[in-house]
Image 1 (cartoon, rainbow, N blue to C red):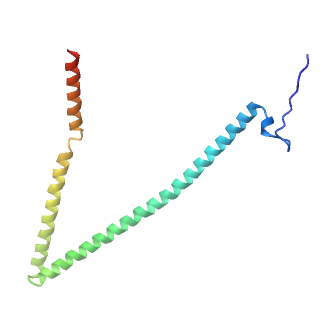
Image 2 (cartoon, one colour; image 1 turned 120 degrees about the horizontal axis):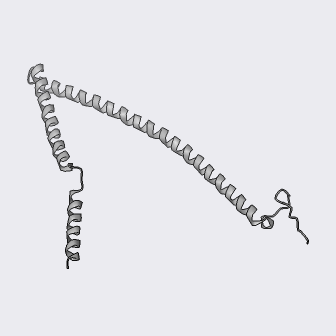
Image 3 (cartoon, rainbow, N blue to C red; image 1 turned 90 degrees about the vertical axis):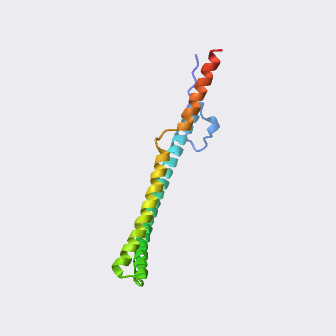
Length: 144
C-alpha cells in the first residue's frame, strides 16, 4: 500500500493559494474575515468616541447659548422696566412689567396643560378603536 505524504507549502516563497488544500484556504479566509471585522470594530469605536466628544462639546455650546439668551432676556426686562419708568415711578413700572411677564407665563401654562391633556392617557385610542372594530367584524364574519 502506497501512502502519499503532503507537505505544507504555505511557508515557501513560491507558494500559490490555488495549491493549498481547501481546509487551509477556509482557515485563512476565516482568519482574514475575523481580522477585518475586528479592524472595522476598532474603527467604529474610534469614530463613535470622536463623535461623542463632538456631541458633548456641541451640547455644552448649546448650554452656553441658553445661558446668554437668558441673560439677554433679563436685560430686556430691565430695559422694559426703564422704559415704563419714564412714564410711571420705578416701582410701579417694575410691577407693570412683572404683571405682563406673569400673564405670558400663565398663557403658556394654559396652552401646555391643554396639550398635555390631549396627549393623555398615553395610549393609541384611535388604533384601539380600529382594532376593536376589526375584531367585531371578524366575529360577525365567523358567525355567518
